[in-house]
Length: 195
Image 1 (cartoon, rainbow, N blue to C red):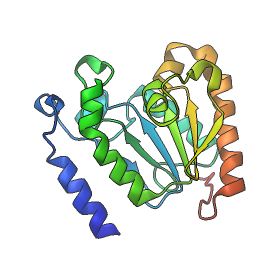
Image 2: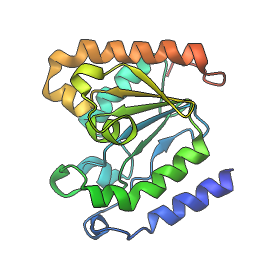
Image 3: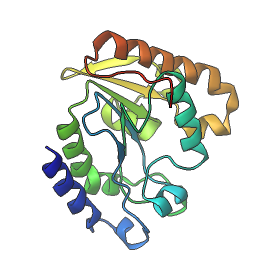
Image 4: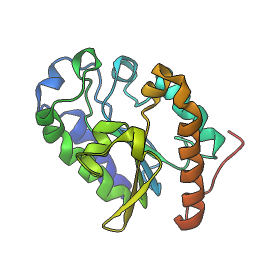
């Protein structure tokens, strides 16, 4: 599997399927354990992610890491984090439908390799795509929806929590629900509390 994963990653790094390749510094393929049972999906890289080549490394990423660690999860050990698009949309705008479509096969292949039991959609763009086009994060966050044997959950995007800190307590409750579901259905995931 590792060889195929590296072939996929290397091919993605050379992608020129849409105009986002013209302004990127780095392709942001993803980070974490490709054998994880839990996959987090965001919308696309921001400025820090584009510069460093890793998803969720700015302020929103630091908040995400704190919430993950509080429930025993870590991008180093037991989850994988990817995005809908692998290159930064200019000025951090939402990725356009045609950009999402051009990039969809990369994420689809990542999901096929990882074969997650749980997919967490961070924010509305991922939730619209994977859960429902009328998904409302403010009302439906923290709910599990089963599709083809995989559980999907929409959560507030960490950047949205930074913009509206009042959402932090309910957002953290979603991480607790996620931890409880992992303990219930995941067989290989070991929670870590000592990173």
